[in-house]
Length: 207
Image 1 (tube, rainbow, N blue to C red):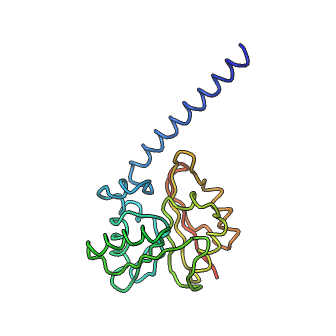
Image 2: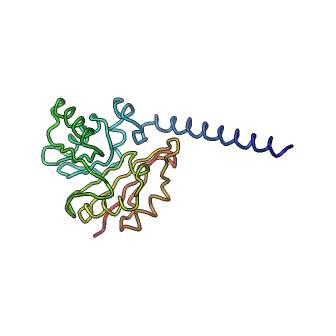
Image 3: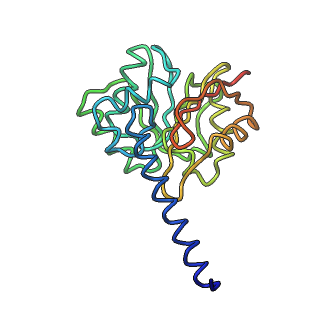
């Protein structure tokens, strides 16, 4: 067998393996334990409730949401924390923040504030939040370690970081890598749910 033919077969094998992995991930993601992979997934009935089953969220909490969630997901968060809690959503641009704010106002979601900024440089006070929630967001961060430091800083003592990730083309953050990076900033893994291809991992700030 020529070297060229072996190379072609190797590439074909990689492509096939990737297709199988993506199909398996989609199957897992449709099972109810998945973190939402896109706004259209979040919009499906029951998808947000399925994800939040694994998130340590309680009434009265102050929650920081990192990423660009669908308004339906933000509305679910707002209902979970109740009238004595509040959700802060960090968007990457003023345009996205304004758009999300309009949608939330149209749906009369009151206990949410939309912020604009960089997760790696949060202009927020120390020890502010009970929970930081990252859904399909950390794998996309070019300065992920710095982002984790910032999230740890703004969490209150005994506060929680909840990270949900799933396999996407060219973007994936394994649980092992996440646990090592979170441990380096003083966040201890509390529990894990799902599979290696679609998981939610919860961490706690000890001090």
